[in-house]
Length: 421
Image 1 (cartoon, one colour):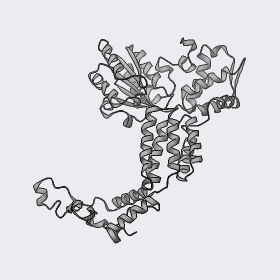
Image 2 (image 1 turned 45 degrees about the vertical axis):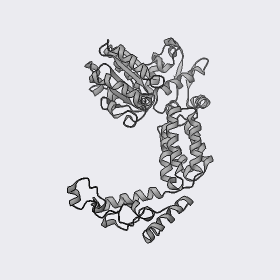
Image 3 (image 1 turned 120 degrees about the vertical axis):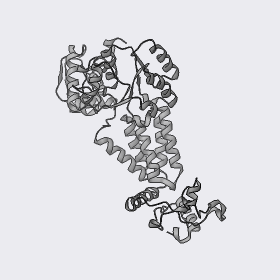
Image 4 (image 1 turned 30 degrees about the vertical axis):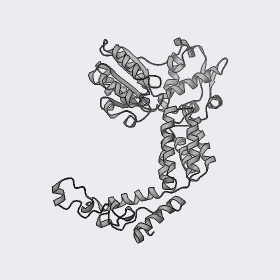
């Protein structure tokens, strides 16, 4: 694809820091990243931020400024073989930079293939991710990289981008464009420069002659292409709240509707799956233990397949969770136990249930009097497991549902009045 045929966002991609809009905390005068670039020595790094905030652009600017050999890999289409090929080439080219987009999609084996080359300085790694690298990048590789956090572009940044596009893009320069209103185009972009510029180009292409950009025109065109959904603003939190409350309220129709709103709006698949995983324990728990298994399988599955197929997996899980019996007994139990820990502090572990790996500890009565449950009838001995100060406290109360009623009966049969409830 020639540069003139490339999308507007690609045509406007700057090659110098002066042309970068936003991220002044990283690239402004005196900032740590700018200083590193100006001194010609940058560390391996992970650029973490939402889509359209400049991760790829910064990587390109670094390579251009340092006049370094620049290799790019996509974690979606590249594997260990491609990584090793780049590393072999980089051995002959000191100072080479390897940019990996969506590095969070690399599995542990793929990330490990980078370790040696990064550690020895064969390559300088620049990884881009929309996910928290603490969870998605293995600790060995992360410890060898600086993490720089990119922020969504603010309204001022986005307006500057619109003005720059109209003034400096070869195609748009030839059009008579009046930017009459900007609220809609900025709101829809959600701080994403790429989305903003692509929408600007889409709106301009909808006009035959002169272009007058108004909120109504932007909404009319955008609604033909996307369902409006602000992933970074209040609506993001309102819709996930509606989704969770629909699950909790056992309404699969409402749950799948709010799920569709998020999917059609481009919500991050992991965000949805992660919230359902939490919900499975928080609101269903032992009323249906299979809910947690399915939610965990859903989280794994959507990471493997991505959109659009992930929509099916999310729908299956959401309708299952909504249709499951509910219990917040586990949530209330850990809350009550945590409150006791905060109130009573660091209570000593009773001697009889302490670990006693050495003779000295045994001489100090560690483990003395412990009753091994499997040596008793029904594999149970009614000994005390709590410190004296909280002995007799009730933290876990089974919920009123079929499965937890079974737990209630089982515990009462073992402990009699202690778990009589």
